Length: 276
Image (cartoon, rainbow, N blue to C red; front, side, top):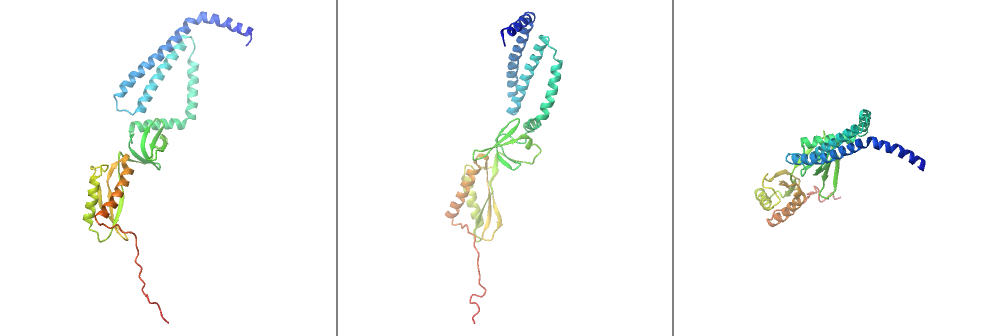
């Protein structure tokens, strides 16, 4: 921009500021007051929502929408104070909103499904769930995604629109072990079951309520199978399963209870064969 153009701009700017300076100052004051008021109202809203039984994402969404609404309202008032006709701007924003909505169907779908999950509460943070072939401990429920944590510290991030409408298996905060151990056919079954119940009762990670299930499962080729199904907290599931299996082996060995290995009996019907 050369000196002549700069001079022309100043010649136009100075009279404009002289005529509309009070309006511009008033518009800036309105926007500033709107920003301050939005923060104050958002803090009051947050305190009120903290007393309600709502999920954190809902509280965050309500406070942010409240704050944005107040700021937008202040900007509209400021534009009117400056003498700007806002009707065409509102129409443009409406058209732009439709276009953005069509372009962001997936994002908006995740948002709506996230609100459905948060309000209907089919699962909560800290519960173990299985859905669309994914399992894990619910770590976070956001507006757009749900994050599942695995014992190997990996994370599964699922878009919320993939969750709503699917078959959900919610284990809650406890899980039941599913262990089968075989004993020989000549074993004293009541004694073997008493041994199992004994070390389950002494394991601090095994829950007493619900009570463990220990019962004869089925008859195998080489053993009578006993079903061992104690309950434990989700966080202790893997460690408890490993401890129970080790305790089973040690307890059976200490009590002379045989865990048979698969075997086959082969008989020769004509052991001598044909002699010529």
